[in-house]
Each structure stands twice: as C-alpha cells, then as structure tokens.
Image (cartoon, rainbow over all chains, first blue to last red; front, side, top):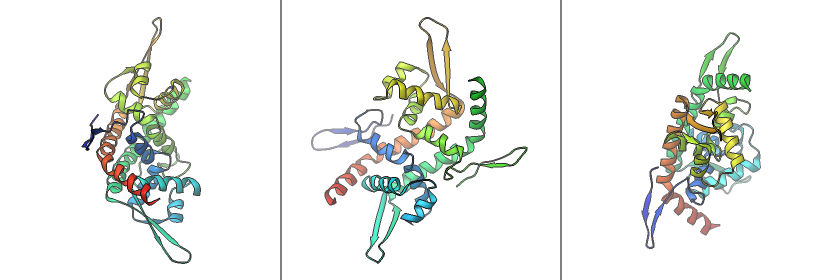
Length: 130
Length: 130
C-alpha cells in the first residue's frame, strides 16, 4: 500500500485505508459511497445546480444527495457556490482535487460497464449452482 | 459515459450506472461498498483464507465479510475454493476480472491516500467556518 507521509511538528502522518481509525477510510467512503461516486462523476461534466444533479443521479433522495454533497464539500472535492438571488441559486462543481478523484472514479465505472457482460454470465452460472 | 454494448438475440444491452435499475449500479456498489473495496485490494496481494482476510480488513465483522465475499463471488470477481479437510479450508482469490477491477481500486486508494493532507486541511477550514 502506498503511504502518504506528511511531516508535522509532532509526528509523521501515515494514511492507510486498511486501518479502522484512519481518516482516509472515511474519505474513501465519501467518494465510493452509494451516491458519492455518481455525484462526483456527474460533476465531471461541469457545474450543476442541486436539482439538475438530483435528476442526473437517478433515484437519490433530496436528503441523501444533500448529505453526500456536504461530506464531499467538507473533504474539499466539491465547491458549493450560493448566489443571493430570489430564489437562491446554488451551484456545485469539482475542485482540482475533486477532478482528479472523479476522473479515477470514471475510469472505474468505464471498467465496470465494460465488464458487465462477464458479470452477467457469472451471475447466471452462480445462481444455477445455488 | 462509455456504454458497453452487447448484441443478444433479443435486443442490445447498454449498461449505465446512472440508471437506477441498471445491474451495473449494483455491481459498482459491490466493489465500492464499505468492505468490498478493501477486500478486493487485500486479495491483490495474493489468495487469503477467510480469517486472514478478516484480520487484513480491520474492523469488518464475520457476517459482513461473508456477505461481501458472497456478492463478489457471484459477480465473478472473487474465486472461493473450499478444500474438504478437517477443519475445512477455504481460500479466496481474485479472478482475472477481479484483478483488473482491484488494480483500478488500488489506483483510487493511492490517489486518496496521496490527497489526504489536502483533505485534512479542507476539513479544518470547513469546520472553522461552520
């Protein structure tokens, strides 16, 4: 596992997603969670308002999308820009770090979509055996 | 979004993780779920018995790891080999498709671990504003 090291005044920080208490595991879960991945990849296409993003991420509830975006904003992957109009307009976009992570997620999605014919065959074989 | 197309006798299958009912979304969730990613990447290092895998994926319960491996086996990413010894010995390893997906997950993890200093700073800034 590649370790990222940052020297601080007090000690050396090592991030390891395999360690239960490591903050990197929480961050990984924000971007790979049920809605995190889809929201990040949707924003790769450009900034979106909340409702447009919700339509793109088919099936997400308003509450879950808000929670997802909140976590991604706190981690510095998503930028939330509110304009003081009536009604207020809120746009979401990716930060440079968000673009890097979302691009990697996109590669993963493309790989999964390309693998689906094999997965579908494996599902059938497994269910026949079971 | 890259579409994977497979022509069948009846119609053309198009996999799209953004579509609520698409099976590719379930598969994506199996590999990016709370424990799926860690189990897949742990198996990149080689085949492991259940208990060794459980120790590697720090914090996972026996039940959750069993469910996770079951879904990954059904999707054709993980191979389960039971030997009729006493006590029975069960080894888990990655299939060729599993290796491809786990390698991409590993790239994602390395990117997240490398980004953690920035994420930690973003967390602090966010919490100070809130």
